[in-house]
Image 1 (cartoon, rainbow, N blue to C red):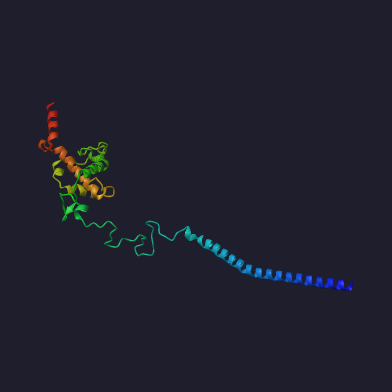
Image 2 (cartoon, one colour):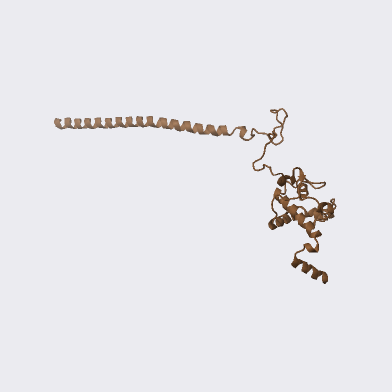
Length: 232
């Protein structure tokens, strides 16, 4: 009986030691796990704080009131008191190098030219007529006599394209007037491209020819039609 009791005590003692050893190992695991979690948690908090700090820096007043000058605003930085700076002398915008005097000024060696800078085709005349109808007819009318709708409402009348002075004027004159204006007519340089100005000038020449041509200058088939209509 005593042997059985002593054997039971030993088995309980062994079991107890194993349980205590297991519990001790569990505590060590918990401690090691907590040691691993703490640095990760600390780095997470640090990153979150840095992230919030970035947002705080981004909400500065500089984002609402930009450090720039408004157009035409004064500046104490420059001696002339202007924030806008003039272009450096000789500056040429990309694509605006104008070395062709005839194309861009209508002149050759400073004199108004009576030639076109490029061959005028039928499509150029059609384009010139379209631009003329849009920009020129309000004052010059569709036939170029200077009796447009604006003139009928009181605006000063421009000269007719069919007077001797303009019939004999070089074609560069019309390009120059469209570019720079003349009298009460303002410049159309910001509305009509360079080549379209030449096309309008070519169409004005066509208008002049249409109103001042002789019968011999009319094509043969059209001449017969005119003679038949005249006979009627």
